[in-house]
Length: 319
Image 1 (cartoon, rainbow, N blue to C red):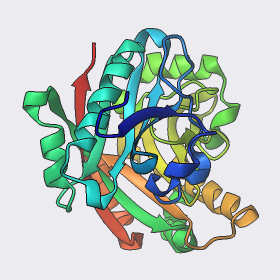
Image 2: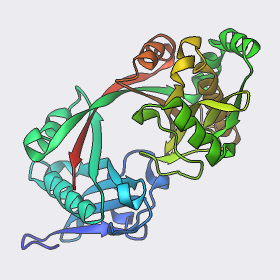
Image 3: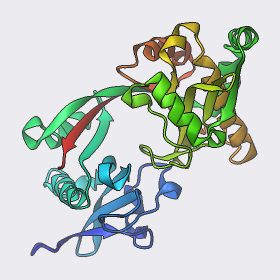
């Protein structure tokens, strides 16, 4: 779409992304694989909508779709406009155009999140106002840690973790090694809430970033899957611990600690064998409705965090 003013919108592919790389979130560069224009029947993936003026890049919107084609949703990864061209309606134009394209491609809803009590909040409130069809959908408390602090974090749990493993026949298994049958059976038996639903083993597009099934862990009680910790690679410089969950009947026993520690240790081992970067980030995302995990994080994760950020989530129905 080209306007008389010289402004142009275009859906990017991985081959046409280069001019707009300065608008990518820090560390995300190597993780972006764009699929062009959103279309029906496409596999879930990442899309980029860019705006330029006579060839000069002005802004970029990134969105990721997920789920089967009959129940597909989308998540906004980032939206950035060059500072000199802000407050001119470009962000609204990008977002509105993306919504129409995603709806046409079969997406039912678009979800986004933004940091609360930061400079961007007023702009995001205007962009995602109720009168524009958006509604609040909870939030997340995000703790940012460095992999260099992992040994001290693990050591703080060592005795507690050892007591759990000595008292119960618990074991962790890489998420990639779980069978579809195990996951389906645990879904039926445990009935986890929506935020904790475990994806099937070959699913990698759940949420922002790529699910890492080798680092993520399943918790077994004998042969039964009773919990899991899901880890996503969200950028070239960070992993996110997205979900840590055990069945309701086991939550009072403290078993959640076991797959969580195993996943964090796996991230540290991965970093030692690849990046060897002590500043590689580990993000712990805790949903507002997960009260038990919020209390746990405040006591046991916060002391090792270099930053804590509360994010707000908003959703808009597209169809």
